[in-house]
Length: 388
Image (cartoon, rainbow, N blue to C red; front, side, top):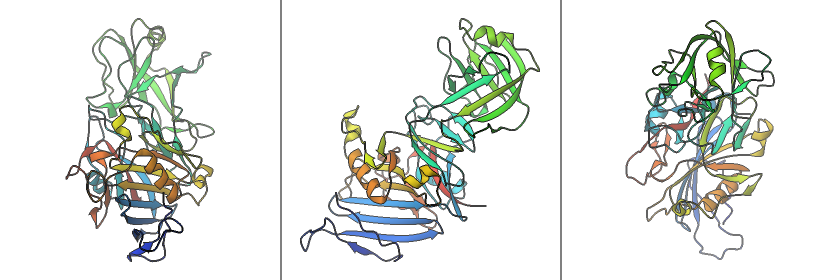
C-alpha cells in the first residue's frame, strides 16, 4: 500500500503525490485536494488510479468552532432517513452515514446521544464513543452496564437490554418512549413503570449516567404497560426477577444507571468490525458472509492515540470510499484499515457501507457517488456541527 503525503497547506488546489518510494518515473499518481471547511474541520478528496479508488476524508480536531455529534433518523423507533436529511436537520457542516440498519428500522448496535443510552441494539459489535468536547474518544467493543438500585442491601440488579426486545428466561429489560412502536413492553409480563424525579447526572468517576425515579405502577400479567415519559422494566412472571418487581410500591425511589464502559463519554454510535487497534491492522480476512470481505463501498471512522489520552491533539478521521463502479472499485476491509492507518488513525472501525456509504458537506451536497445511484435511508449518522 502506498504511503500518501498530504499537503494541508494548499487549499482548493490539486496536488500530485508520488506513490511507493522509489517508484519509476511515469508511475500512476494520486491526486488529492484539501478544503478547509471550518477551523478544526477539513475535507480531502483523493483519486487513486491504482485501485482505482475515489476517497473522501473529513478530519476533525477539537476546536471552539466545531464539534462531532451523532444524530438519529427520528426521535422514536422505527425511523430511517437519508444522511443528508439528518445532516440538514442537525444544521451540520458535514456528515457521514452511521451504523448498520436492522431490517425493522433501527440501528444494529448500541446508540447513545447526549448521555442517554437510547438502545442496546440486537448485538454489541463495536462503538465509536466520545466526549462532547472531543478531547476524549474511544473505538472498541463496549462494556455495557445497565442496573437498577432500590437502595437496599441487595446489590443493583442487572437490566439485560434497553429498547432491545422482550425479556428472555430470567432477564429484566427496560423500555422508554424512544422505543416508539417498535420496542414496547410485552403483554403478560411483570412490569413496573418508573417516572423521573430529577435530571440524569454523572455518577462519581463519570463512568455511569444515573437517573432518579419513583415507582408509579406495578402490574403482573396485564396488557402492555405504556412508558408515559418514564421507564418500564419488564420480566417474565416465571423469572427470578418477578418477585422483586412485585415487591415495589408506588412512590418508592429507585436509581437507574447506564454506561457503555468508558468514562466521560456522552455520544456513541455502533459499527463492525474493528479495523485498527493500537496502530495495527486487525481487519478480518475471513468473513461470514464471505461477501463482507469483498471490495465494496466503505465508510470508516478512525481516531489517533491522543483521543484515547484525552489530549487536544485528538484527531478523528471520517472516510468514505466509492465502489461498484469502473472509477472506484471499493475496498476490502484490510484495504480500508491500511488507508485509515495512513491517515493517522491508530484505532478504527468500519461503519455501514455498500449503498449506505454517503458523505454530505454543506454547500457541496453529497460529495461521493452512492453505489445505488441514489441516497439510501439509514438509522443514524455522524455529523460535524458548529459549536454554539
